[in-house]
Amino acid sequence: MTHRLSFLLAALGLACDPLPPVRHEGVHVRVAPDPGLELCGGTLAHMDDFVARVSAEFGVDPPIGDDRFTYYWLDPEDFGKRTPCPDAVAGCAVYDGVYSKVAPLDHELVHSVSFAYGVGPQIFVEGLARAYEGLEAWRSPQPQRPRDVWKFVSANWIAPLDYDVAGAFTSYLIARFGLDVFLSMYAGLGLVAREGAIDRAFKKHFSVDLARTIDDFTADNGDCLHEHADPKLSECGAPEIAWDGEYAAEFRRLACEQEDAVGPYYGGDVVVMRSLVVPVEATYDIAVITDEPALAPALAISLFPCSQCGTDLAVTVGAGERITARLAAGRYSLRLHGSARREARIGWALTRRPDDGER
Image 1 (cartoon, rainbow, N blue to C red):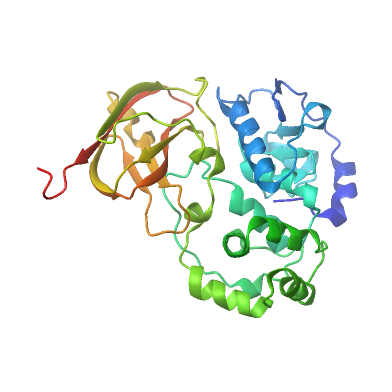
Image 2 (cartoon, rainbow, N blue to C red):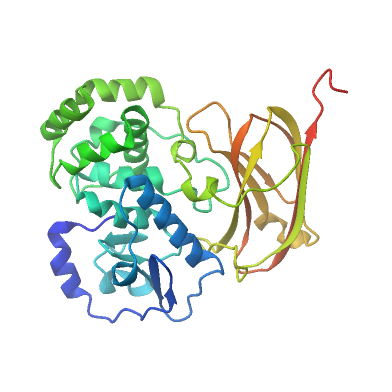
């Protein structure tokens, strides 16, 4: 969630409790956590990578030096009193400052990057952050929800907004008209732009009116889930697993302090990000194991296609499970999931099954 600009100065004035000092210095992000809050070993590097990728996508220079974003990771107890954020939200961004109850929260980092284009109406401010926030620690796509765009077109900065609606519609506009054109349209809108101004901006930049665009969205893209629409910039740009297209396997320790472990996220989750290129469409056996059965519920791998809004679906396999899945050719985000609170060992194997006629 972004700040409510009309209350910003007053909110900052009410933040009388001191904020913590910076303890982690990254290339693009500095992190200032409250005492007792500890980043996993790869979280700062992930934040830097994420900001660099989103900045490149949006055509702006990532912040460096004194311009770096400062990420305040704060205890939820008195969050609303110390920040410009409403107490009920997980975080908010005020230009180069992010205030959050959790780490990482990439949604807010998108806001800080997008401030280069100003602040438009709420549906597009939050829609843009939702469209690019990545997978966080989700293991599988979330259920489809109603998408009534008209209900939120003129949403103000006090009334609730459905982020799924905003993100889905914004993702659709970017896919249809291109990010550069969308950002040009967005930059021309003011904070309080309502339906009429948005309609005029659509006609100018998209050569189609708002009503027709919403109708097309409902007809063409209503079933594309957020996790498939998001470009997954860091997830799909993660280090690629080398394999022969027939068999890949790994058995490793998974712990928060490891340099490739990102977290602890909302529920104390840790994620390791990789990417995998499937050379040809085929059927695969996917198995996940652990030698610590008590920790199995916290362990899994997930495979999300890097193609957007296609027919390919995500696959999640928990520890102790073996499944068979048909994977289309292309790049996938392959992530290992565990608990930031407990070290564990996890193994996984991906084995191509011969198709009919290949035996």
